[in-house]
Length: 463
Image 1: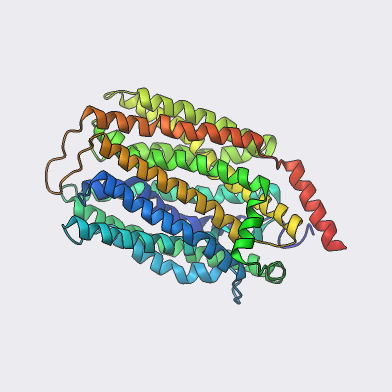
Image 2: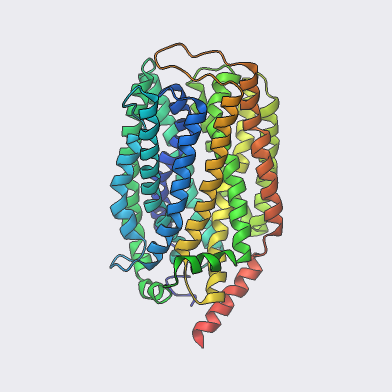
């Protein structure tokens, strides 16, 4: 078994190719997280509550699709395997639909609401068609405990690198079209859509030999259980419930902070709009560097300890952001760097745990169901995120946030709206991070437990 394609060490170039698959996905996701709510309120001119509702509808509809796509991916029979057809044929529609989010086709708010709702549903569907099969490749590439952490380090290095690249691109485009906000986002949508599609094909070409060499084994482990039965089995897997809880709490911390960050930098800190991408780059750049540091540390102390160290630093940074005052720009950047230490663990640790949970499921059921587990993880994350973004939009609206009218000078926000922005960037994410720490403490699969799972699987196959 140690020499099988599923367990032998992965080459550097295989890891690079796999990691590249998340580059385009991260560029688009990062642009959406940081800019879409702001675009809807300050460029399209929609009220914050309506903008939050659009995002919630898109995410919830997308979350419903995820388990279906996951099961269909598990059951796909194709010469390229179970995952690659979805990635290859979904890449171009994914790029086109991403671009369509960033145009303002009309000034009527009712028309804009329904336009953005339809595009949100379709674009999120296209994203899932590509991203879920891509994520489910990891257990098919390797079963090694440390190799999976290493593979995720490469994946999220490209992911965070793509996030940083997207912010650099945004900053350059905003500087060139500084007096034309509508054109800014049209150009941003076109550029990011184009450069996001190609890495998906790089991943396919660079990893297919590795996964296809083990294709027969994957097909033998396929399952024809109805989706409801698969959901029931997945939710009966105790460690999986811990992982999705850890991921949900961590990712809510990331995405809630990212969504409110433009408002915090521009409205609370009273800095120019061009400053916001620089603050985001400070967070993401630190997270990129720390990915490999945490991966190295994880090999010695384990995933749970790494998560605790990173998230505790992150909580301190979030608290500092609530206290920072306009004019304390250096302190804001310092806290952004400290937050990056924790943000990297939100990328690395939960995704490194999921393949171990899938191995436990195979031991218990004799089936390989990567698609359903990955899709459920993303499903619950999207539901939580949708509700969180909706609540942020509602909170801003109740607090009296004044949306920008296209072509007019940005309004001065009332004190109640500024307080809501500060609460959304600090206490709210911190609450989720604390819950994530508790779940990580209770998570039962250590390195030793995983080694025992693999040993039992090996003994079963030898019988």
